[in-house]
Amino acid sequence: MANHKSSTKRAKQDKVKRMTNKVKKASARTAVKAVRDAVAKGDKTAALATLKAAQSKLMKVAKSPAMSKKTVARRISRLTKQVATLSK
Image (tube, rainbow, N blue to C red; front, side, top):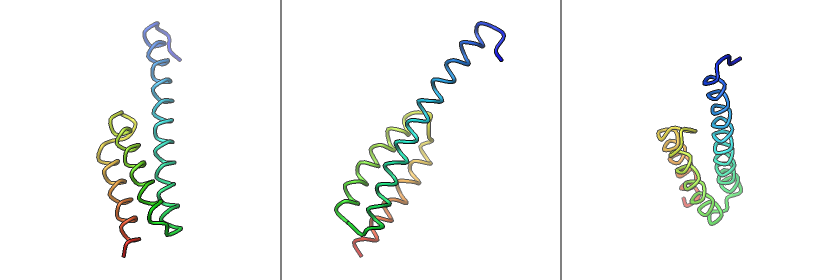
């Protein structure tokens, strides 16, 4: 456990940051899941709408240290490919 005043403060700050990052990641996962569900159902209009929302959510997460920009780019790319298969 933290023994100094500064290390106690750092522990508190880390806890808060960890929780905010956890919330951001969870909301991004929920958005991605909505896109995958729409693709599985074969609903192109719903898939496009949820893809747009998921891209927005993921890009907001990429701004924070919760997820790296490259990880977000890879996920968006894969989702876009999945939605594109519906138009074929």
